Length: 237
Image (cartoon, rainbow, N blue to C red; front, side, top):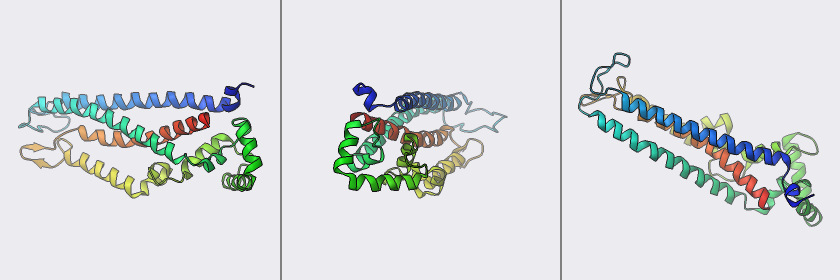
């Protein structure tokens, strides 16, 4: 068995390929969503009445300002998402730096030599860890690697981005609730034709729709960054 085959299972290779495809799809979808919002902002006749949405909206603000703002916010959104991803990747990589956490993933088909060494010299720590993991997952004597990946994601002992690892319960996390509350409030306040009256303008912009797009994509970044950090961790040993 070659070193590559020994240290990397077929499941792990397939998961990494799936991760790459999924992240590329999400990135393309986020870019498409941002462009759609920018086009909505740029093509709306701000200084005239639009019966469908109840204009006029911003007669004192030239349409070129709206177009310029849309052109500015698109690259800002892109770079914010890239920065968010790199920051989370680094955070998860640091959180996985403890050798003891590797015991969750010791597998004779993944890490043959390390498994034998750990079993011989750290059996007192390995066996209780395996028993605790088996009890938590309730999957029998040999939990699947995919189950261990998901379990470790939700239980990784790092407070960073905890709200993104809580699943549906994340809506109750203060940071998530406040972020979405602010985003929805700004959308309502600045929505053209239905928001606050600011001088001669009713509402101001559609660009606030970029906020929920950022929040959703940044949440997905947490999972993508975690999985990539984990696969690198397993590959490099």
